[in-house]
Image (cartoon, rainbow, N blue to C red; front, side, top):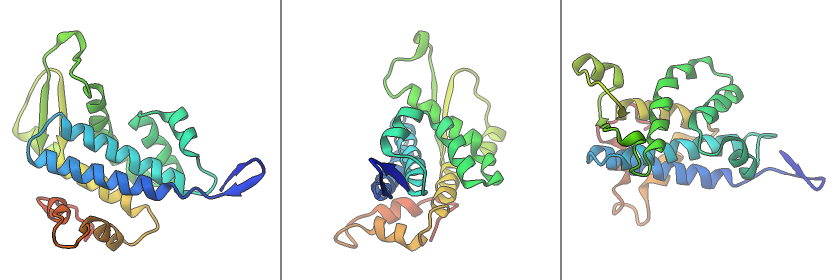
Length: 194
């Protein structure tokens, strides 16, 4: 609960952050499955950022949207640390590398690569650990591993006090049956909510 001019209120903007975050995540999955990089990485960055910000808005005595922007901007690792602190779940540290990998895509949102260096843009459906066992690439590498992002998404959604079927409802679209977002969500997803 926030206090503004002596009036207490609970922000309801969290639901918009949730809805938009899920949409960015689904769009990122689609772009990843189509090997559209760097767009996939950018969409995942926006999706995870919105989901974390929405969750921080949901908690009583947390933040206003303006405070979130002022304190964190688009810095996913800083947001992630605050999210871990507020959820008090030590198991979330296993996603630190995934969050760092996703955040790097914000650096190349525009094609202004540092010092004109060449970069390798990698999108994979395999977990990062499995992928690294199979291949070695040197240099400036930007990576998105769909299995890792799916697991991170699942963990963040589970921290919300809502039924995972509400996410399914959100993905069904209007009118039902025409929207293919559930198919995009389930395609090669090792960590589905439903």
